[in-house]
Structure formats: C-alpha cells, structure tokens
Image (cartoon, rainbow, N blue to C red):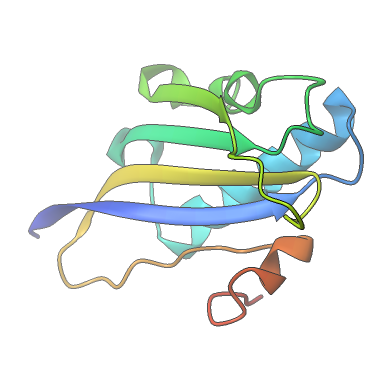
Length: 123
C-alpha cells in the first residue's frame, strides 16, 4: 500500500457560542473526517481549525487534543477572515494526512456548513 500526503477540508457550525456546543460540533466534524476517509490518528500529520469571530468560548484544537491518539497530531487554531455575510458560528478545518494513493479524499461539510459546499455535503 502506497501512502500519499493529502490535504483534507471540512466545516460545520456550532449551535451556540458555548464550550459544549463548540465541542459537540468539533467532535462530530473530526469523527466524520476520520470515518469517511478511513483514517487512524497515526495517519494525521496536522490539523488547522479556523472559527468565525462569533465563536470564542473555547479552542477547537483543545477539544481535538482530548481524542484518543491525537496527542501526536500538530494542532492549530486561528480566526477565520471576517467577510460580510459569512456563515455564522462556523468551524472549518484543514487536515494533512497520509492516505492510500488510490483513495479519493472525502471532505465533510456538516450542519449549516453543507451550504458552503453542496457538492461535498453528504450523509
């Protein structure tokens, strides 16, 4: 099996600006990324999370770091560029992972973020 370093994107929205709501959204997004791409934590090199300015109750990377096996993944949080009319309470991610070369990457867009990329939204 040949592995290739691939970039994976995804996004979701939090129901509110609370640690619980952000935590639930991040966990759902990360689990979808892992399941849809048949990834293990050992295949992840790094994940950058960006959030809209209306989400400041906690750090998404701190939530991801608690997941089993994620202690070896390089994580970073940043604030999404403010653009008028942007989707509120949005959490985006960019992950770099080792995938089988023949496997097409799956980019999960969940909840209201599915409207950002209807071509990528799915179950």
